[in-house]
Length: 162
Length: 162
DNA sequence: CAAATCCTCGTTACAATATAACATTAACTC
DNA sequence: GAGTTAATGTTATATTGTAACGAGGATTTG
Ligand SMILES: [Zn+2]
Ligand SMILES: [Zn+2]
Ligand SMILES: [Zn+2]
Ligand SMILES: [Zn+2]
Image (cartoon, rainbow over all chains, first blue to last red; front, top):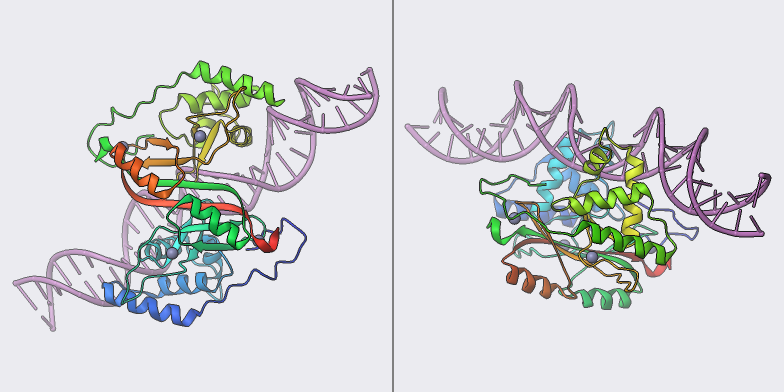
């Protein structure tokens, strides 16, 4: 995931997620929701959880099987499912996917609008809770993150189409 | 650009931009900035200005010449230029491009963070000025737009990479 | 239990989006 | 006008994402 746009080291690019705990929580969430966390879905989530930073769909595809790649629809379907369950987020500006930092669980559903700080250089992402764009600047400043460009896109239905 | 996800008419999907005036303003802006609004750049901007809603790169490519399509790099380069000049915005969640509603001109440079309301149904986009996510809800409500999902992504440099 | 139904998946093929690399031309500088 | 830079033309290819259809397995229904 490192972008290698620079010459300094990226040893800070490490996330520490308890993958097993997340997988168990996801199982519980799906069970509680009447959804099935099938093998391809589980494997896809596992890979994304284990990846250091946002992961491309084709990286999931390539690493899906020990022996060879998965077929794209297998993975794209799993990604859609995981996104709908709130377990991962799609990063539109990177065409990549990252595990939600605060996923719903069986007890506590937690759908939310996520905001991300995305480093151009090391590729790391930080999911921040924010309800205002000023907040983004504040949190970025607090984290020492220099913001260059913000993407804000709201999807829905216009008045005429409702 | 209509998405045809519905059976109602989309006669509201019409924008009215004074294309000639925008092109002249762009000429002036580039002249003032020491940049060159070359033929491919001008043609690309003209097509985006004339399009009803966000336009895909390959639609620009296909309509570039009266007789046949342009080569992709020609258009992608022009799109990058126009975006850097603040004349168009890229809509990440659509892989599309739209003319800025309030572009800079020779007198008044005006770089800004744009926010968009994007209709799932008719494909129309509305560029709104906003400095808070609550604002998005307010403006959407005022416009009768029902928001289903908001994308917020800030790109830049993390602390370790600065 | 068997039939019907629905959801999910496997597979093939392909569509849509975007860039690398290098040769050529046009503009600008001295 | 020779040297330099910026922009374009051109070919090829890389990356990202879906349509379509059949097979399998789970769930519901009678
Ligand atoms: Zn989240
Ligand atoms: Zn970084
Ligand atoms: Zn704008
Ligand atoms: Zn609409």
